[in-house]
Image (cartoon, rainbow, N blue to C red; front, side, top):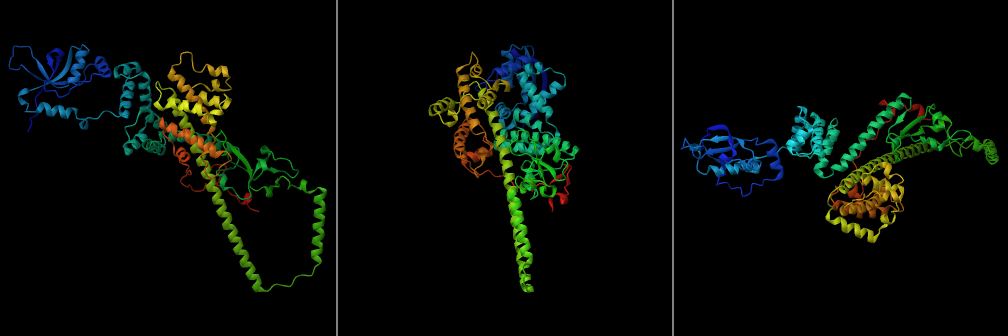
Length: 555
């Protein structure tokens, strides 16, 4: 049984301390980062020693290291004269204790480095107490940018996010992930989804999706308030509209003139829905009338003006004559009661069947609409995440091994996406984005402008990346249509586009791109699936009050 050693704290000269001949570490591994830290900060953790000549009181003390060989060697390398030490009583040492302590002290199972979050908290704390960014960077061996980013991440992470991190046991996240989590500190559900995505390898995609949804939510909240202020009814779900509702752009007045939206606002049937047809504005709306017939609106060709032509008048006259003839015919014999009851039952069954069919069709439309919206959003989020990966990849100092061969083979085989590269505006804009140029530089760039994008001193690696970026921009343009994910409704060229997408996405995965679920669907040629959501409730004036549809949706 070991006895707790008596310890004396002291500041010892480095030349008084000698290495332990029983040290089992073969290499001290004095890397530059470690030596820089020692030189800048000195030895912060005392070494542990025993005095070798304790039985010679008049001699200058000489010590042997028990713990801290790297710290001692680093101090001597940095010409540090003195370091803190704990001096043990040698008479209390047991046989084999040197080896046991070395094993325990250096066993990875007993040592745990600070997590990135804990490091970020430490850097933020140092800045909060008044240390300058330059000082913290110099003394911790980090760049000023690293210190700034880490401190910002720690500052943004509030108690809610930290609670989710603790519950998920997900402290070991890099600074980029932590900074992204800080963006959603007020949304614990989003934080949980992002942590889960990080664990599943889909973090970039999920982050892009969360940012898109947040931007849409904020934009729509603002638009709701504007619509409420102006007294305009908002119908949240276009797939759940009343059966008689029609888009305003398809309606005319009694004279056959197109309806003006500004004038139609005064119509009791006026409403708007979110425009989910692909508008760049997430808060865009489309106008409609909930019951055109009740408010004298018509589809083109059915308005009264179209019915007053000579041919229409003759048809009306013929109908009137026929009606008169019918009134002169003798009244039909009265049907017996049994036949009436049978007819009533048949009519009731037919009505119930029609209602059930209409309800099923409405639900099917709602599901299809929901799938379309979710799929389009997922695909656009995948595009954003993929292009973020490409921008980061293209800035690397060294190219991944497969890149040169793939670029060369693609240029030689010249698939359709590469054939389409003509330096046109749309592809040049994507290329400029991938090369981290401004939107202005990419807008309508001429051939001469594009030639300057590589710079006069571009390295061979940079030139390879630029060639790759041109090919990537061509593929990105080829597959950027939101419907590319749709396996269920192919258009004339969608199968060719999906085939090109598979080639491109598979290669990006080789380079390290984390494929999103919708991209995997494209590669595997499998349908995109979502969790079914309940039908949305129509809102009146966007204030959460259920709409009174009696005046607008009934005859």
